Length: 501
Image (cartoon, rainbow, N blue to C red):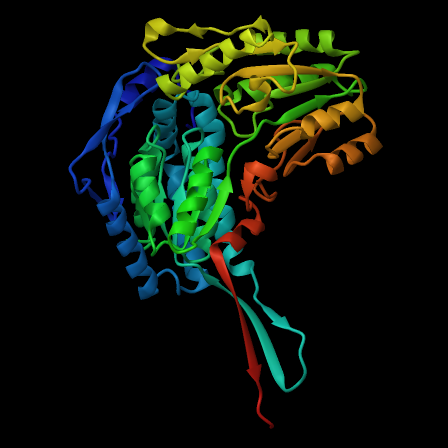
């Protein structure tokens, strides 16, 4: 959205969208083999946007066969790096050209504010593709140290067929975090978007072919986890599953791998991220604004959401007031209203889940300081107001389980040592932050935190150049950065004995 638009203009554009709703297999839109469809419901108002093809085992089989055939043909897997780079750069350019449409689809489909979709999700998506395109001809293979009569070569080769199963909170961005490095390495891909948010994935597949990516290299199979998702996880001709979502489903993919061909499985399974604010915090107002944004951004539907606010007791009361004041400015509104800073929860089930956790927090002794209710119910949509609990103990349910909603648990600690112990007392280890003016304490905390991402005096810092992933049950492997390329390639060692000259 290059030019600012008002609510009426955006609503009119949304109504005029030509929404793709069929599976995309071997370069063409096709119905599900069964003819089944499912309703794609907008959380904005509960309306049905379209009916989407409901893929199942037979559709997955078709998509895998298509991906394997083009991989063996070599039109992408064996293309020169310069050629793959040029096509992927064109792909990124076309995504940017269609940014307004993609932002509208994202906002309608999963309820995020249009301003955030246009400012964050879509630009970060096409920039991700562009970054991996630029990396293609800058990754060198290796020569091992050897004597003069032999040569050891260490080379990277594409894996083959990659299944990417992505969540509904950042539908396109999570997809391109998989597509970028997997395509750059020369793989073929079957993308299964979440059933709550399939629309950008279906449009992007068409754009990929327009950019010159060969038909069959990128296939999209919308459908449900127990059917389409399981079929991908169990398929013997899928070489790798890369998944972002819940730990429960991540563990299923590990089982599917063991029951089938031992395919590689890469997981990013969320967290219960601690945001530590110490008494020597350098800027209380900035920390409070970051704490509010860290849990209420994208309605709290963020795997790195700072859902546990761990505060030294000497500043806790003052700090909570600042966080509540910052959160009060982030009330839910219509996702298509450019003024909205929070949108709708992705669907009714998730809204009820969030409200259930709020009830649980109160019943276990948490002190509800603000929020806690569904709002805008007259719209037909699914909205929950920013919610802050005080008096939370780290063994309470809302401090242990990932809620994926705008619910903040405030935990008071005596000192830095207890803060770090509390932060690490979780089965997750995706992200964490510490606010302190003491550089020694900052370094010590960063080392002691069992998290893949650590931020000092900020929340959600970093860029595509930094790896993204977690410790413990937050997953395996890393998205983003050059490290992500290693997930989508085989490392081959070739040892050559040279004859005498």
